[in-house]
Amino acid sequence: MIASAETPLSVPIRSIQCGRVHPFRDLDEPSAIGKHPVQGPVRVRRLGLEGDEQADLTVHGGPDKAIHHYPHDHYAFWRQAIGAHPLLADYGAFGENIATDGLTEEAVCIGDRWRLGTALVEVSQGRQPCWKLDHRFDGAAVNLGVVKSRRAGWYYRVVEEGAVAAGDAMELVARPWPEWSVQRVFGLLIAGDHKRDPEGLEALGEVSALAAPWVRRRAKLLGLEG
Image 1 (tube, rainbow, N blue to C red):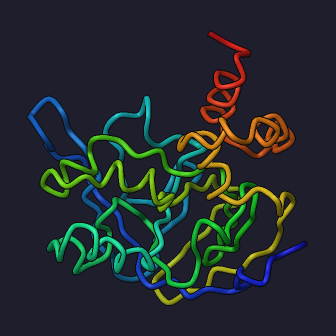
Image 2: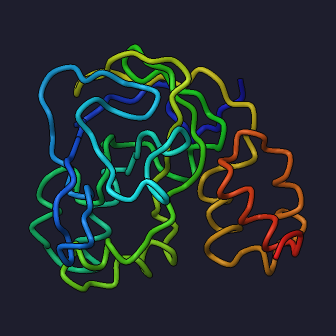
């Protein structure tokens, strides 16, 4: 395993969040982006945390998006960017399941395997933001801010089921692709960095742990599919 100096090998979990599907913008546009801290251990299943839901399974949830991690480190940035929104006073403002400090997109790589409590999870892709973030924050330009700042968070697939609770540790156990941080891959596939780094976009094909939607995104940017 190779870990950069910026990557802590063990990080305490500040909070675990789960949420149920509720009406969001309109009655016919439900969402489970409203996640709230839960107490005690939560079972980690192949498709996510027990008690957590996703509304639109065509773009959310599934094996490659089982658990969403958003760095609590970024909340200070967002307070500066959009003001002291009430959602930023608690965990789960960005619909994340896992909240930590000291672990951000430049220090986490696609394919990283982390011991999450007693479960084992693998980083599959960054989070591609959508309109729901802007709506959740009352029209603030959060979606654009995520792309410009690369503060996107990331998803895990579950390799081994187990349980996790706030206060447990996350421990890095494997890093097969140390050159492919979430920040770099997000930049290439979502934030337009492929225009100045076509070689990087080409080389990204070596990362077999990359989730299928981002594999297709890469192919489209390379002109390999319509």
